[in-house]
Image 1 (spheres, one colour):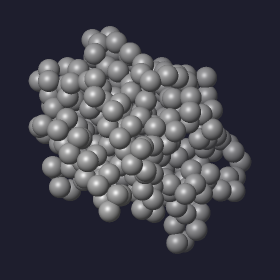
Image 2 (cartoon, one colour; image 1 turned 45 degrees about the vertical axis):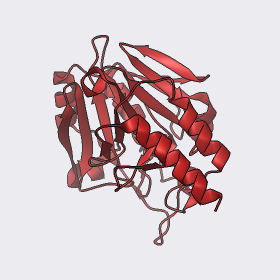
Image 3 (tube, rainbow, N blue to C red; image 1 turned 180 degrees about the vertical axis):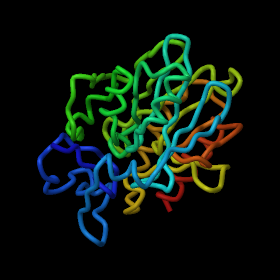
Image 4 (tube, rainbow, N blue to C red; image 1 turned 60 degrees about the vertical axis):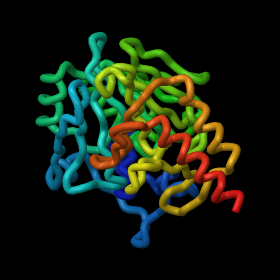
Length: 268
């Protein structure tokens, strides 16, 4: 029995004797099946050809990403916390070196994920560190490998302790979530957004989409709602889903400016 991984999105499936017939995550309009058709790989295969790279983004925040890039290519973020570290978003590769480094940094007490495109090998990670996976219940149907380590939450926010708060931000997915880290950016606050707030090449702006690869926009109402969910939180920095997608200052003004620009474009 093998927990196969989708090559296009990196999602790990429950162990089966043969690869699944299809990947529902990629069949959804927000993702895609590559021109070469549905392809699968295994944890052993990617461990043989890939490795994980590390970066300290700031004190208490480490990035972990696979090289060469695999599937969507996002990197995870490890937030160090007195009550136990939190892994934000996930990746598909977990090897012995990564386990040793994470344990040296204090392990993982909880794994929180922005949306199903980054569920990746979350169950393998949870088992390696005896961690709890915390997902918004609105995305429960997108879990391809059910496991007792998964806990679903509901509502507008969830306090994880130590100044870490999950914020429900529907749009890209119904259960889309961001993580507010009050102690980030030198105590001025940081927002770990995945691609719910998508940090774009022009760092003066972010963007918001239902589907990024297929260019399906959100409505003006949804964008204004996404702007509103973070109004009550202080943050000067936004960490997106990739190594270089970071807004280093004035992030709250960036959100407001970006929402106004997006809505104006929709309105012509």
